[in-house]
Image (cartoon, rainbow, N blue to C red):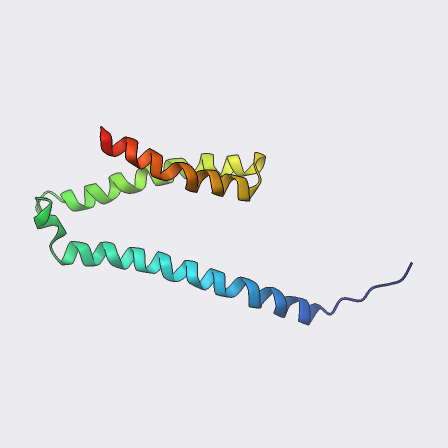
Amino acid sequence: MASSTINEKALLRKIDIRVIPVLFIIYVAAFLDRVNIANALTLGLPKELHLNAKTNQANIALTIFFVPYILFEIPSNLFLRYLKPHVWCASTFHHHPRLGTIADAE
């Protein structure tokens, strides 16, 4: 049996070159999402939606948005135990617009 030597530095460099750009893009997208919410609140979204600043209706609306996100995150991670990630992500992306259309119709 031939012994194989692995150059650990080269392997880590190769992993870093492939992983770090993707993580950077995800981080920037998350940052832009947070900034967009702040900009929308600053540039008059509460006025357009007739949200009362004294009763913190804009903060309540943001909280209502994040509650389902938190509730569905745990089952989503549990599904990943039984399904391959590419199957789960593809089905999520496939069904998400349909669920949004159903919610808009009501």
